[in-house]
Structures are given as structure tokens and as C-alpha cells.
Image (cartoon, rainbow, N blue to C red; front, side, top):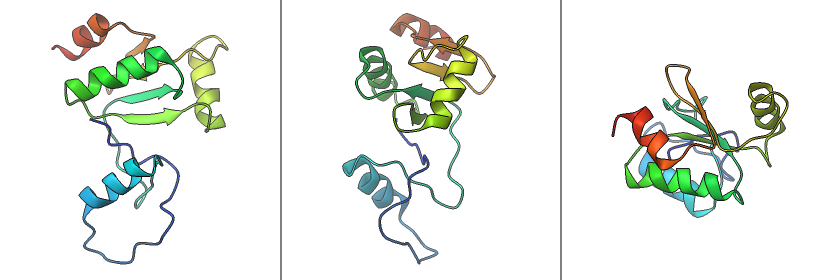
Length: 120
């Protein structure tokens, strides 16, 4: 399940200490933005990709189907993320590049490779 706090802040400021994260999450998803709240929430999986990449769409669909939470980083919109992916892939921007909590990495994985990595 996509739960990325990302780096783009919400358009309006939030002043209440008692924030309903459900509504904020859905507001961000509806507006297709990535948000930052108090430094963000870190997920165990980080996926670096683009919105136009077929393998990225498939990996995201796989995670959604299996209710797997992950952070999403769009390498088209975030130069730092693009540079990071290139540093991991011998200077190439290969997406999706998926980093797991244990430090392991899958690049352009198949659904079977994702299932094997997650034990599902």
C-alpha cells in the first residue's frame, strides 16, 4: 500500500496537533503529491521510479495487491533520487530500483522476484 510521505509539502499549512492522517494521506493521493509531515514517515521499502515506466506501474500494482507499504521516489521529479539510483546502477537510471529494509535491492524485478523477496 502506497504510504509515501515524500518531499513535497501540502499546499495548505496544518496547525492542529491532532491530525487525521487518513484524510491527509488521501488528500495527497487525490492531488498526486508527495507530502512531508514532521520529517516524514519511513517505510521499510523504498521504490525509485517514474510514472511512465511499465515495470514501475507493475511493481506498484503488485505492492497494492499484496498490501505492501513503500516509499515512492519519482526520479523524474527529484534529481537527488535520480542521482542515487544512478549511483546504485553503475551510472544508469534503471527503474524501478527497489531497496528493502535489510539493504537488499531489486532492479526491474518480476512479480516472482518481488514475491520471493517478500516471502509471499
